Length: 103
Image (cartoon, rainbow, N blue to C red; front, side):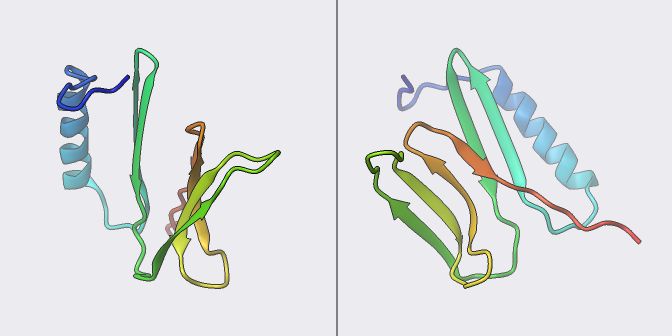
């Protein structure tokens, strides 16, 4: 189990930090989401951000049902494609990432 104040990835964090610094310094300007995941000893951590200009963000909570897991979805408060990603109560994480093509 994860413990507050204990780093489960002592050797991986400097590598991740170096990757983020180098990639952000050399990256072209694009509008794309960033995903980071790490796993060690059965513990999986996932982080991401939605790089989009719509500030109307929203969270939706769905309780577990007889045949469904409880889940949280996130996205934007709009009628067309509001959901951008989510996670269920068992830890299944889903999101998508897309970038424009160069012409």
